[in-house]
Image (cartoon, rainbow over all chains, first blue to last red):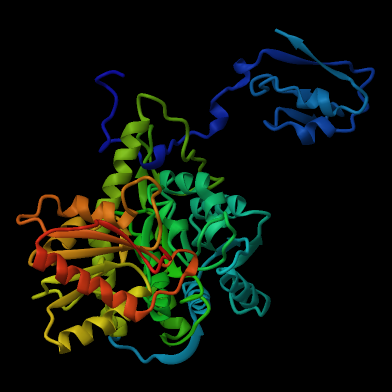
Length: 92
Length: 410
C-alpha cells in the first residue's frame, strides 16, 4: 500500500473499471503449454467449445484453430477432451 | 401523482401478493428455482409470463445458486431483477449473496421464511434469512400479506436508490403468511409501474477516473467486481457499510411517500411501535407474531397494564438508534427470536437489542425467548406469559433466566 492509494470515499463502487478483463493477460499463469499435433488434429472444434478461457479460436481464413497464449492458463482441458489425442501438455 | 389512490381489495395468500407486486413493478428478469413455501411466488409469476401479462424474461435455472447468479448478471446490465427463495435454497445462494451486495446490484428477493434441515422441516421460522444477515443485503420482514405486497414494491425503490444500490430481501413467514389468504388492498398495474418507474442508472467514476453509466454494456465495456486484494478490498467493504447506513433514511422516506400514496405506513419503515410511549414492559418481535402480540397488548392495556410492542421491520440495516429512542422509557424488555444462534448466548435479535441498549441509561432488563422453531405454533396464552414474566422481573428487580424457550417440552 502507498499513500497514493485512494481511500474508501474516493474509490469506484464495486471496483468498476473502464477496461474489460480482456486487458488483463492471464496467459502468464500457466505451468503447462498445450502442444498440438496438426496431423492428428481433425478440426472437430471440441477444444474450442471446452476451453474455459475462450483461448482457442477457429480462424475461418486459415480453416484452422489457433491458440491464444495470452489467455491460455494451461489447464489441460483441451488435451483431456481431444478425441484424437492431438493435444499434449508440455511443462514450460 | 394523486395521493390516496383508488385501490382494489383482493383475497391473496402472501406468496400471491408478492408475485402480484413483482408483476406490477415492471420486472425485466425473474430467475428462480422453486422451493416450499416460496413456490407459489415463482409459479404464479410464470403464469403471468405464460399468459403474456408481463414482458419479463423468465429463467428457470437448475439451482438457486444459478438463480442468484442470473439475477446478479441481469441486474448488472441495468435490468430490474427479482427472485424468491427459502430455507435450503437461500442457503445454496449464500456465496452469490455476497457477490450481489459486493457488486452493488439492486436485486429484490422474497424469502418465504422456513426452517433448515436436519431434521427436514418445511415450516416457518427465521433460521434461513437470519443465517444470511451478514451477507450485505438489506433485510425487511412483513407482518402480514398486505405488508408483503407493499414491501416488495417499496424494495425496488429502496434498492435502486443511488445512495443505496444494495440488494433487498423481504421476508414473509412461511405458511403463516405465504399460504394464508388475506384481504390485500392493491393498486392498479399502471399506478405501481408509475410509482416504481423505470430503473435509473447512475453515472459512476470508474477506477480509471472515467465517468460512465453504472451498468454492463457491450458497447461501453466495463468490469464489475474485479479482484481487489490487500490494498483495496477493505475500502470496498467500508463503502457497503456506508450504503447500509444511507438505507436507514431511504427506507423511512420510501415508507412515507408510499404511505401518502396508499394510506398505509409501517411505523417509520424501520420499526413499528405499538403503545410504547408510556410502556413499562415491552416485547420485541419480527414478522407475523406481531399481529397476535398486538391483540395481547390490547387486552393488557384494558387491564391497565402498561405493555407495549416493538416490531422490527428492517433488520438490516439494524435501526439501533431508533430502537434506543423508542424504548427509552421501558424498564423490562423481552426479545423474541424465531431462530437460534447455537452456542451464541441467545438468538440473533437478542444480540442486536442488547448491543443497541448497552449504552442506555438506565439500562433496562432484557430477556430472550426462542420460539416457533420449525413452525411450532405459539398460542396467545403462551405469548401472554411473556408479559407476566416481565412484570415479575420488575417486581423482583432481577432476571432469573435470561434465555427461555417458549412452547418447548421441558
